[in-house]
Amino acid sequence: MESQFVSKFKQLDAYAKTLEDFRVKTATGAIITVSGAVIMVLLILSELHTYMSPNISEELFVDTSRGHKLRINFDIIVPRISCDYLVLDAMDSSGEQHLQMDHNIHKRRLDLDGLPIEEPKKQEIALSSTVKQNSSEVAKVMCGSCYGAALNDTQCCNTCEDVKEAYRIKRWALPDLATIEQCKDDESLERTNLALKEGCQIYGYMEVNRVGGSFHIAPGKSFTINHVHVHDVQPFSSSVFNTTHIIKHLSFGTDIEGANTAPLDGVQGVATEGAVMFQYYLKIVPTVYIKLDNTILHTNQFSVTRHRKPVSNVNVESGMPGAFFSYELSPLMVKYTEKERSIGHFATNICAIVGGVFTVAGIFDTLLYHSLNAIQHKVVLGKAG
Image (tube, rainbow, N blue to C red; front, top):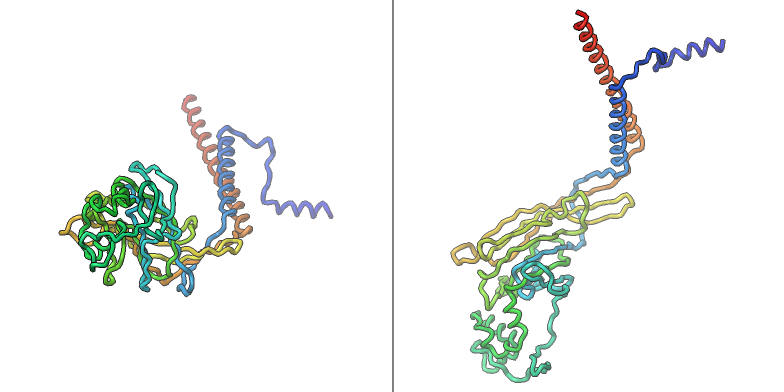
């Protein structure tokens, strides 16, 4: 009874075996077997790599977040304008302005070959004005001349900056600084001489209001007159500044691999027509990235449209040389969530790889074996005839 049950149970075997004596092993079969095994291993490793990496799902919804500041990270090189003549200004649509920003911003002096001259440093704001006299610094107490730019008889210009400010208020062109007594022993004369003989790397980050706005890097001292933003580049004219620049990095938040968080990295703006105004229009999409350990990263992706126009000639469009970045925030937010992949899905794919490669290799081996036998049979018949 038991032997009959075992005999009937054997009838369920879907993998009937042939006798070893009836099996024919060939060189082509060995090649196909080895090739199939290699392909199988490569596909399994690829599937294992996919399984080990998290599955990232995307969601798109209306951005209702509030209170976050917008962090702007940047690293920009201007190889033909010195650091003393470059300023960074930012403003937003709410009316807030940040002129000549230096908080969390570093400047590194470069020579014309792009090599650092000294270590980077922040811009320092002078609290008092002094002049050098006999290799020592003493306070300037006399009433210096404003060289005709004084608003009244009692106004004094004791420093080079005072003279420049008086001329700026009068909107007069500055004379040669070497002819101004206050500027002879002042560092501004040396800075003016080096304005076009050095380059500058300006980098760091700034946090601004989470609204649309703009920021720019341009030569000259910036200020506002009658709600108009202007740059004073005296004693130079705007046309002498070469605003060629290299954007080493620009992002609005944390960099995320696979996301479009820094599309401008490595972009160069080359001014071939004298002074050029480079404009970058950025469309920012707020982004949230949630990792497997539930760490939440707030960042922003953005797309960019570039435009340039020469401003060195009075007959062309108005503007001032520099790199200008205008950004707008999208009302939509993208959410990326990392999720673990299913072990069942991984096991199913492994079985599919093994079975598929084994089956295809078997079909290919059968076709090749019978084709070679048919050709060999015809060759034998031809020789016999």
